[in-house]
View 1 (cartoon, rainbow, N blue to C red):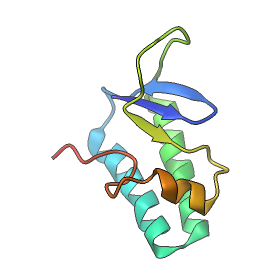
View 2 (view 1 turned 90 degrees about the vertical axis):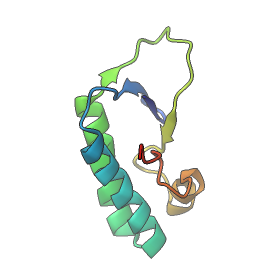
View 3 (view 1 turned 180 degrees about the vertical axis):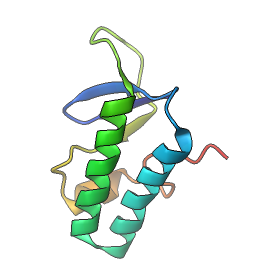
View 4 (view 1 turned 120 degrees about the vertical axis):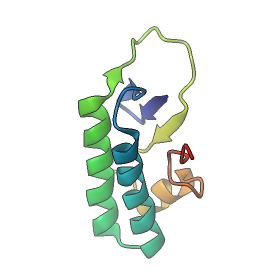
Length: 94
C-alpha cells in the first residue's frame, strides 16, 4: 500500500505493522468525530511519524498512484475531515 502525505511524498507501508497503522488511523478519525482539535493534532502527528519512520520512501520518479492520502500535519480540522472516508484514511483490511 502506498500512502501519500500531502506536501511530503509517498511511502510504501506494505511491510509495517498494519494493526498499529490502523490504530493510529482510528485515533485520528475518533478525534475528528469528537471535534477535539487538540486530539486530532496529536493523533495526526502520531500517524505521520509512524508512516515516515516505518514506511519506505517511494522514488520520486514513481508514476503509480497513492492508495491513501493523509493531510499535512498543519491541516485544519475541516481539511482533515474532508479526506476521511468513513473508515479513516486507511480502509480496514478486514
